[in-house]
Length: 134
Image (cartoon, rainbow, N blue to C red; front, side):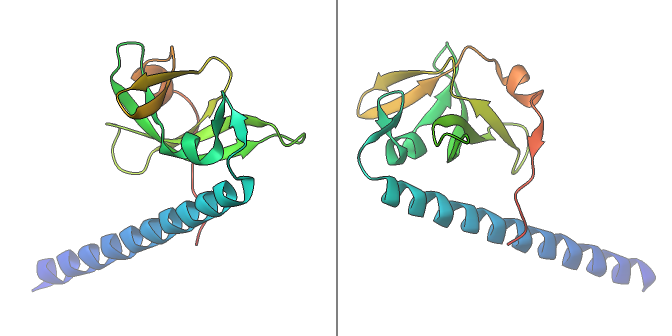
């Protein structure tokens, strides 16, 4: 009986953590979309609007997808200086700040993506960014 109780408690804790993470991700997404709407169609960085930056994938020089842009961040002078990116293949919900410097736009079909010279290992070594609680 005791192992079942422990298993049930563990499942409940994991579910609560997943719900908190999902709520934090939803809050981040709403905030990013609002910021992009307020910024409008004017180029924010790399000749792209904030909305276009949010739609972009971060890719390596080999064209392989490394992550998704989740938020556009600005410095004290209101210039875009970094992006919050969710890294692919490192497990769920691993976020890092990627400097805008060194990124270039790449058009693939109808998509405009951002190419970095960093590898997935380089990205994994960047400090992890924890999303604020919802």
